[in-house]
Length: 266
Image (cartoon, rainbow, N blue to C red; front, side, top):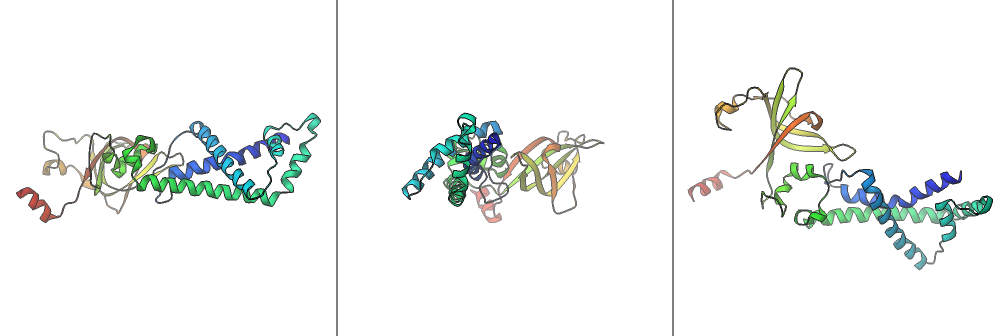
């Protein structure tokens, strides 16, 4: 019983650190916002440190507002050390039950504050483009930056594109029972699984061909090259990342016809 109480109390204590991490890495703007696919073993140390900082700040605020914090009860509940023959176990539990409303307010407000701080930090990093200019602020998910085209705006990227891209052309190889096929189309959206890994990609204007019908000398985009593809009926083509073996990405811009003619003349 005492061990279970200590374990639950420990989880409640470190939860603010994980809430802040989740809110910061995920944000709340889109399903495919930058996220982190770090393992749990990588998140635990950061979560403990963040939770400690948050508790120090929140305890200081509680004391400044006139609330008393029973540190001895917290220590006993956290370590499970209740003295000889568990003599102080009832005392520690009583300290919780007698102040249930205040403790609930403390943790509920702290959890909300941690989430708010995480969301605001995420917004600030994205708004100020810090993740594009400074590696330390970059979110640990390369798929977001690749499929959004933002990777070309990194300060250390070999491909430098100052303007926002207008579209992403994806070409990939998918294995079927009869043969391997090449799919291509314009990326319109993409989603992650629960671990933050790429799960599926939505394509429009999609087409496919057999991989065996590869080009033989003709230029890419030529009538001979494009005739090997046939369009796929439907508004969206959904490709699962687990079924893709090779992926090629092309970024393109939509230029008004008048502007294109002026650039050609100049």
